[in-house]
Length: 140
Image 1 (cartoon, helix red, strand yellow):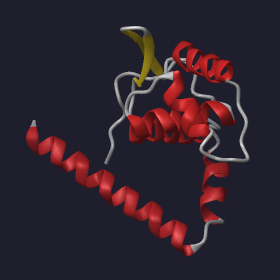
Image 2 (cartoon, helix red, strand yellow):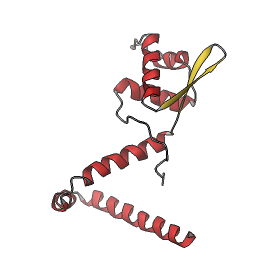
Image 3 (spheres, helix red, strand yellow):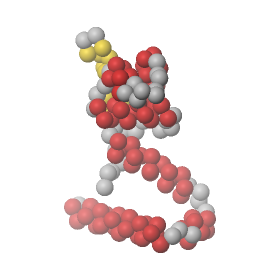
């Protein structure tokens, strides 16, 4: 189970190109504009200006997803959180937004309309959560 990280980006919403470039940086671990640009242009049907990659990397840095450092003559970017941590943050936000509706009847009505596989998945999540909480209590 991936816990929520202490750090979270200032802005979670990302556009399609931002998401694509962030995924490339996650794959590479650390990347320059050239690294990202070359990766995108591996698709022969794709065109993207080098300056556009620079702009998106800067935007991801401003949003709090990446950090930038200068190494010799080139800038390189590294992710501030891992992909699993980002997925955990986004899932938490979606769930929190859903539960913030504040109407238990609405939430119960939604849950009642789920198929058997979804209900089993929710039950498995609840079971896992109870096990984690028991384990924490035993460690204290």
